[in-house]
Length: 545
Ligand code: GLN
Image 1 (cartoon, rainbow, N blue to C red):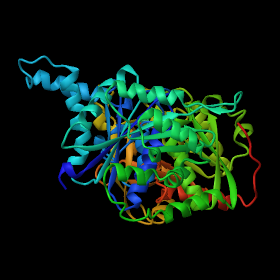
Image 2 (cartoon, rainbow, N blue to C red):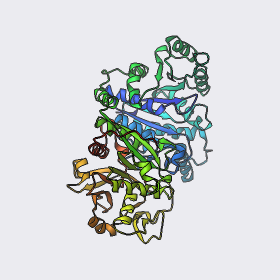
Image 3 (cartoon, rainbow, N blue to C red):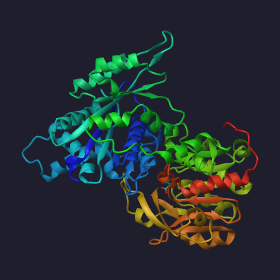
Image 4 (cartoon, rainbow, N blue to C red):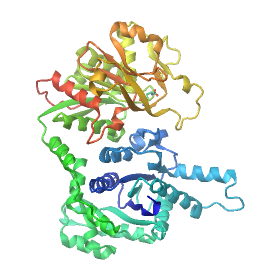
């Protein structure tokens, strides 16, 4: 399919940030996909980091890793969870990456004699990146979400690129603009002025929105929609209400009711093909909303103040819960405050314990204490990346008697480096994009908990780490009952550990949460939840932490 057959949809936001552009983009993509179109979603991020891998999760939430090893914005996680198809580096572009490319070209002499400028050089590079996905020939529709809010200085080159693309005869595109319609309870009114200003601001940059999605906490009456349409140069059918949903997975259904997909197809001059086939999605929603039981899972991490730091883990728990007809109540527990003395108090009411990924020293002893509690109390346990490494350290200290066991990430000269720097990392000095990243194969040993979960021998999972299990200790661990149940076939790296004499205790060096989707919940999460259910025939009281 030539690029000029691919249609482009830009999603911009105004009035405030955090309106949920990612969820609206993913929901629209879902509906279009369900009509038989091949769709992908791209995120353009206006910050100057080359990728979010060097950002603290407090700043920007989780760093999501694609199969091809790109460290990307967490919205890509939503795209994959909704569409059930993988994204790649091409699906996330930052200002840093754009400038880096243009400046490298300038150094190579690609623009010799010319002044390199935002327009056209930066905007040309933005446009090239947008069309890259279309040019693969794989997609009928590319949805490009523009991060930030219209009016931000750093968004300007992106909006300018959209303006240019709207006038490009080779490109067929529309713009969806998301705004907020606040409700003033004192006057009992919905206010459209911020939306009008936001649309006007977009117009000042030469871009006319084709569709408006209005985020609201109150139903928007027809006459208000009519008014918005009139003031904003938009047809009335293209003013879409986006009400608060109980769960983000309801939004595609809301958008279908609002006919967002129909309006978009009409504006793009594309046929409806068929009514969206979202039966499986609805079946998931039905299970999600009508659970047979409820369980309490403790998520032990150190970035819990910003829940977006662990968003893929949270969603994977929700998917796996629904698959098991179970509501998962996630308790966010700070690892920093956890100590042997208070652990029973803090973790006592939990049915399952998950120790999260992470970096650095802060909170690590709390994570190790949580592992010890889960292991000894026989509480189902899942450790992810640093969580798995903590499980290894805890076992070494308390079962192998290696009290000085640690990871060399924290203690370079510890007597027993059961977790140590990977060989390939020893010469690495740069911090950006240099971890072991992306999907690698893992061979699963038969008759293990991992084998039962996956039901196959060879799997592929995504990674993001520099440290690994030290194979020198493998036999000692095995002797005491912690086995390596998954090994990287090429390099011999331990990818999965588990304890045989425990209801369910699994640690994984990789990140299963990245590949859990609504239609395909991750098997490890599904097994974890089902182990929790098996262990707890009683209903435990919800314990707030
Ligand atoms: N800090 C650990 C490592 O680099 C774990 C990383 C993680 O949890 N993603 O190996």
